[in-house]
Image (cartoon, rainbow, N blue to C red; front, side, top):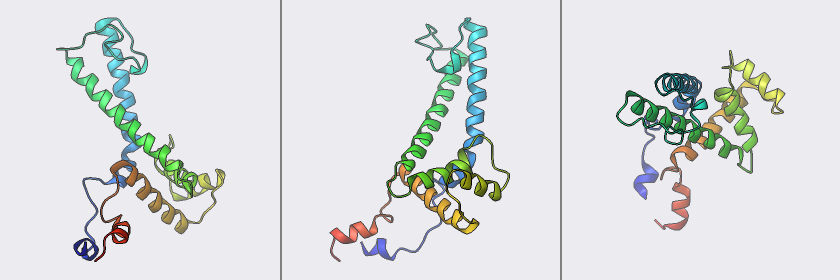
Length: 173
């Protein structure tokens, strides 16, 4: 207990670098869309079946990809798509926060999830104003850090350091 409370601040966990993950979201989503299109094209060319945005899995379409070059590629596309779904669900979970979920959602959405990457912070502030959350640059950065921490906790769970006050309440020194 004392070790947790007295532990010095450590570098940000590079294994769970949520901010970096969010910064890469648009690129990954774009890459997955391209991969799905390529997979569908290859499937159509090799098996004469279109998998409409890969919503239908190959088995349901009556295609056996086992042992083919497309099998590993299809698995990779499906894994990537599932990863994006997890991130999207985490974003939607942030929105459900009863205190300021909608504001956190909008900060994250306008910064990392909107289809077009904002040119600069001013564009994000204008977008935030448009959706009903006017704020100055410093408030935006505070809210962005709060929102990143919220989605981080949803994606990776709470750490003991985050729960130190709860632990203190239940465990005497």
